[in-house]
Length: 223
Image (cartoon, rainbow, N blue to C red):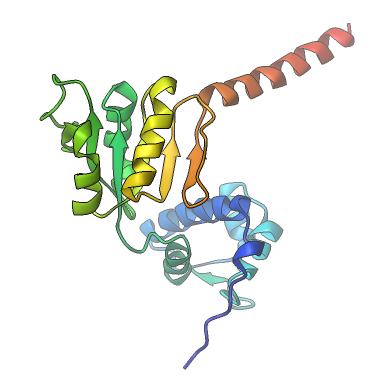
């Protein structure tokens, strides 16, 4: 029996897992065009990546390629899917059925490749009982714990106002949801047993503004 390599999870950073997701998308495309093998150099050239970084990242998980041949596309894709835990279905609950929540519910990336939106929750009686365009039902906020238990929800998405976000986080955590994606523009008080990733679009825009300002300042300095 072939022994699987022991993976040092502490050595696999979030930056590394983020790149694994990029590699997985590239491999999914290669599989769709029926390409069977790919080298790190070809992967890097085709998708504007770094071949040395690819080899370093994949080395965390043992010898996945064959010298002189490269990586088997389907096998590497399956391995990365298992590594990222998306070789199984992850049920997702969205809290907030406003424009953002509904857009997220209808985003194909949240309803394919291991993720399934089971429902949206809201407090607006005019929204309760309706569905998103993709067919996800909108339920009343009070059903949070029932839906988490009955649908085996593992991931919660916060798509509410900044003022309501902390209460939603606490309710999801108390209901047993251990992973949360937060879109509210607020710094949450976190719990040790819950993993939270925040997506703040304004922070990214301000970062771009900073880049533009530096470019403008540099241009002015050369006049």
